[in-house]
Image (cartoon, rainbow, N blue to C red; front, side):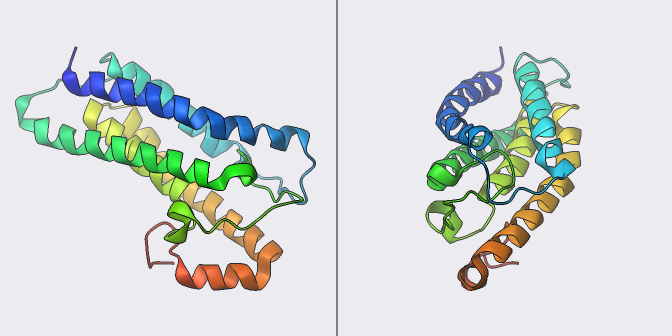
Length: 192
């Protein structure tokens, strides 16, 4: 098996395990009545695309739906692998930073707090930026003709989901969110 694929496969397992604690906290949103929860396809579609991407990444580790690995693309694949590893752990950091307010759905909890620590000090949506970069990175590292198109399709939906979250946070945190927005970027530091 290809060494890049082995490293990527181990990182999938490690980061999935690290994200499990965040997902466990996210399950509380199924039990607790939210203060506000918009009804929109953005609640599920980006999650479905991310799940399909994860399945395609796992298949890509076993060289299913990939093109041949020629020596000419080794450096490009290495760059994709590094992007995947770095941003998978930034995503874990983001979920851990959210702590008790982490949910898999777009909502405001009754005891919701505006999180401004960890990667949220710099950008408001590090989890979505991470999802975009890690999926593109994995697709490039694996040379997957399935993962890359899914990642590209995912981009506008993750951006729209982040915009909806911004509107919801603005509505519920008013001045506190306005001040936070002035000091943080949307998905890229200092922009948006």
